[in-house]
Amino acid sequence: MTWHVEPRVLEAYAAETIDQVHAYSVEAHLVSCEMCRNQIAGFVDRTRLDHVWTEIVDVVALPKPGPIERSLLKIGVEQHVARLLAATPSLRLSWLTAIALTLSFAVIASYQIENGFLLFLIVAPLLPLAGIAVAYGPGVDPTYEIGLASPTRGFYVLSIRATAVLITTTVPAVVAALALPQPSWAVVAWLLPSLGLTTTSLALTTRFRPLRSASLVAGAWVAGSALAMIYATQSSATVEDVFGGWMQIALLLLTLGSVILLYEGRESFERGVR
Image (cartoon, rainbow, N blue to C red):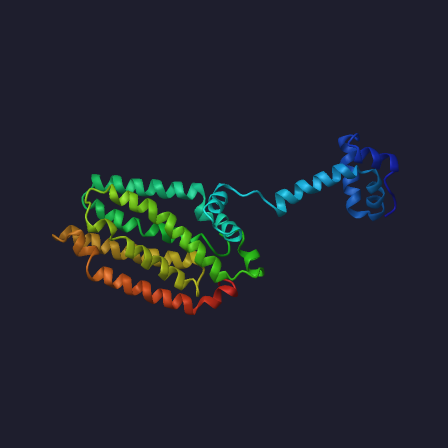
């Protein structure tokens, strides 16, 4: 370093009485000059500096709880669990609004088109699947890398977030199902598909990234459901014939099997999602 900032200039900079051009020059110099940094420390108002640092700590280290986190704390959820849930992308207001709109369109379609009720049964199980796909994992979870370095187990984070997403998507889906034109046992026919798809996706997450796992499961569900809709359209089959009986039993077995595979592969989440 061949030059240093004059003391009077440093004092003016600390007091914010220096012009903008010289301020930029001083800032660029302070980055690489330890001597000038030490010298300017004597001109800084310590009270003001402490106040600025307190504000930084409040914003960065101790962020204020958002509406979701405050609501969770009020119902007795522990603070660290509430903080983990509040960071879940698929629990934000924009995501929940999109779910409500999707369900609304599905209900309207069930009144407007033939076999529209089947459309609702296809769409409803996909909503929690999509929510869980973006609840955990690299690229979607803003706290994912931090979580890997923390003592909190990844499987624990995934479990509480998946449960929260499943509940928050199931409740509006139940309300929408009650508004369907065919209020029978079939209004709950989407529940087991929903559990089956989400648990299968979570089990695959031990091998693939969450988004890829969810895409594979969603593709298989849509393809199978499309064939079921074609069958229902070309025959006299009812909704109970298509989504009831053996299909519900198969989905129950799929759910139980996926839960077992997920539990056995839980350690993979501690090494990071592939």
